Length: 371
Image 1 (tube, rainbow, N blue to C red):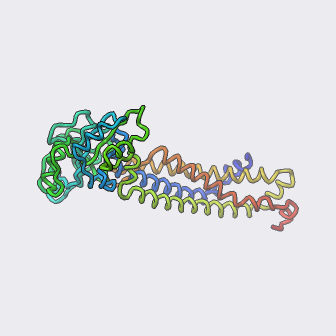
Image 2: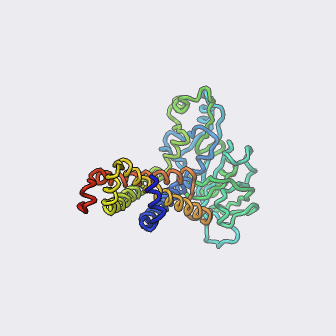
């Protein structure tokens, strides 16, 4: 191992090409991972901040918030189920928003949420009618505290009281107000989707920790199938496009890892051919094949770690310079660490293809110049 590190220190140019290529692969891996995390975060933030265990839709909604309607009688049935601690209504309306300072046709996509069980980061008591809290990604759209936005074709006014973080939905900025605000805006702008007093689109349910097991099934059974209850994770997975995004990006990441394995395999196979005579001498003076191969692995790990550190630095710089609300890129410690680990493992697997050649080196033939 000392010999392997000494070679890297004295002849760094020999490893420069592999380091550059792996660095580019590391940057690509971390960018793809950050883009995937950003896309998922921008689609699911409104669900992840919910302060509950279950989301309850109507039974015929096909697990879609926009198609769900919960009547007051059904809500009362849910509230009476053993194990239910608290229940809050939830409603949404996707509308175009007019922001002062922007052109009259330069609409900002907005999702208005009405709540009465406060999500994380929002006040326990919903704001007064006509006032809302905005997702902080809307700052990039010239939205500030005190801004009055006009929502939908009816230009329903809502005034921004403050901001909440990481609450986007379907890639759009959100604003959060009371259920009364939601009903007023929805009824004014979406006559086909009008709702009456007490009607909500979904229920956020907090369970009693002592009797929460099987709570979703008990709720749906008690309502006679009028509801479809999902955990927050299940509700996120049911959102359109989320599972498809994960599948596509994970496949691309997988292909990128395979490319890294091939690059390392080719590089160290060529390096092993160049070192055949050196390995023959080392074997002749007592070095084992295991010792030689450990040196090869160590060099591959060092190259991968250097590439990973540069990739992590590049990802952090990207995360810092990309304005909020533009490219959905998030550099999380978990993603950066997992990408670095994957790259190191790929390097080890790649250099493992050199093992057979190292094992087959015959000292006498190698010293004599016969490969």
